[in-house]
Image 1 (cartoon, rainbow, N blue to C red):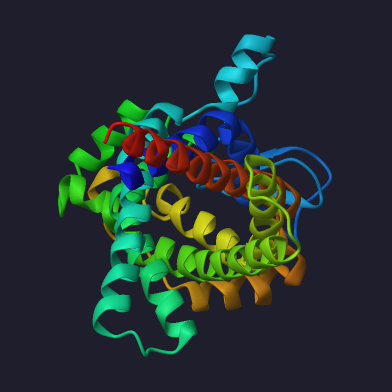
Image 2 (cartoon, one colour):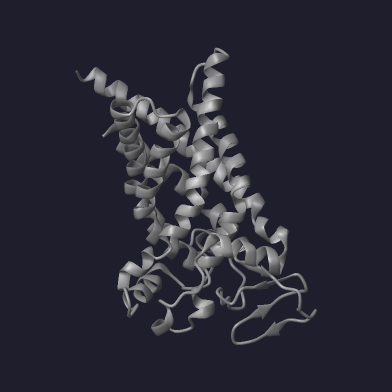
Length: 311
């Protein structure tokens, strides 16, 4: 229960505080670089061009933006937040519970495994369970953030009316998100362990501040290294409406292979496009990682102390 509660609290904390930054990052990454655009504004049934540098992918059929008051701007930046919040509790708790369970099983039955293997297997298993809960929320969130759909209800209706798989179609991007998050989390937790060992060796006490600083630092490093994968993930998820303009064809999504997507973006748009939204990703992921790990570590210790006090 300590792992479940602490993991859920860490996940909720970062989602509540940083969803607006994630929205800005997602919209930035969904922009396609174009080489053949005139200076003037061009409107077509599938594309809206704004300048010589970028076009908004037709996967994001943006209407002409109306002026927003501050409340409307905040609401817009928190597009898709309710579905994210609903998935935060099970996904956050499940990740740390499975990770801890795998570590205990490895220590008991195969204690002689190489340290790298014994470290990465629990992380990979935790990520796989995490995204079983998170994938549908991530798909719906991305659709709403990039304005493919106007709200969560519309996204759910599209999924329900999918003629092939219905609501199960929300999990079709499960391999895509795993191919991003497993490398990220492995880099992140290995670095976090190294940093924590260094702090302990240096004689500093583990506090919420040290966990926050370590989490932010490790998260930003891992986020920078995996930014191209994040761009590919956003493009793949946000492409449904571009290639499937009606509900009947929505299941026939094209390429969902991350390697092919990486090559396609690099070939057609250049290396720079693989790092679109890098600043927002570093900010969001670094802060999210720091908040998540510090909230998890601190609340877990507090829950353990309360459990001991009740004995």
